[in-house]
Image (cartoon, rainbow, N blue to C red):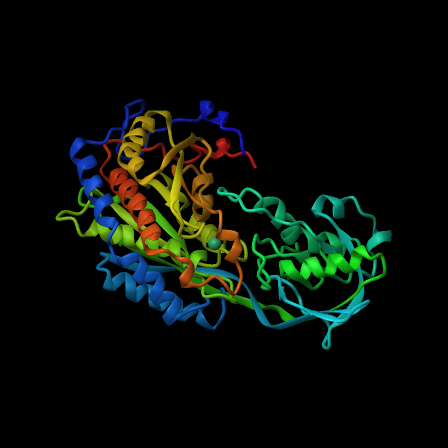
Length: 474
Ligand SMILES: [Zn+2]
């Protein structure tokens, strides 16, 4: 984990509605109102209906794909139907990657077909596919230690096996091979790249995900094998004979596409220009229907904002819900939002993004100014009955608010239980049945509580240009 000690050096700056040095506080009335929202969330139908309808009526939402515009229109209509005061879109432009199909098989020593998915960003193989001898590495560092001599003209395989954990910490090592492996293999002269999926399941389904080539990199076709197929390949490799693999990928970048972030807002009654920002990303990978990644995140935020809007009076500050565009290919919606709102960092009083499935939230970490820690403790009083523990301060990452938090926006990290998340993530198994309505509503309760209390708080949480930039340690 990243160091939690960096908080001691946080810069403190005044924002719109607070004076420097003053403690941020939450009134007893606001706390009582939040507790009521928390309890009402348990049986609220809005979030589950949102993700059920989105995955049923739209389904997969590959950025720039056929469903991109349909999904945005759907969210605009749903935000309006939920009675949000203001609904709009902001353009996001990115390279459009297209998947048309993929096949892989072992040619020798024992011919067998393999369950495979091309990685996002991968180019196609030549028509009819390519074949090559497999050279295997246990993980990305092992590939880094390789020389061109070992790799040239071969198909590189990385076999790192990801293990499940509540906080999903093994995803980092597992995805380094996916994001950086193909570009490195290409630099070493490999003709193609395959890896064991970054997934914790034993289904015969591959996990896709983005791979990154820089403009100067040679690009080679890259794909993920299901865990059982990676096992099969490794058993053949263990026999010591050369293994020949055939890869046939039909995919690639087709120019630029302009999509949009979809934004809905409950307007504040006293400080409408100040806002609490919540959201998830609307795009998904294409094999599944984008239920846990990340229809759930948008649904949680929409459900929380809607619940707050049912109060007799609008909260003091606005609640903004953002359905971000194209997170999967490289945080394009995040970056576009950060660029469009870079002069409004201080008005974004506090934010949190949900992008880790729909299982219960167990920890709340934060990145707020020291004077707001008492208010965070007050939020914890309302959240503790939901099973939420207090995490550190200075350690929260913004997800799709990453650009805004790097620019100084205060954020919370609301960590969900990720034990099973990587069984289904980026596979055909990312479907609605993986979401438990009660667990989803625990998330809605947490988001409604924190968003409402941040909107009602006397004082701010430290958002200011540059406030937290040096608290990030990448
Ligand atoms: Zn996601």
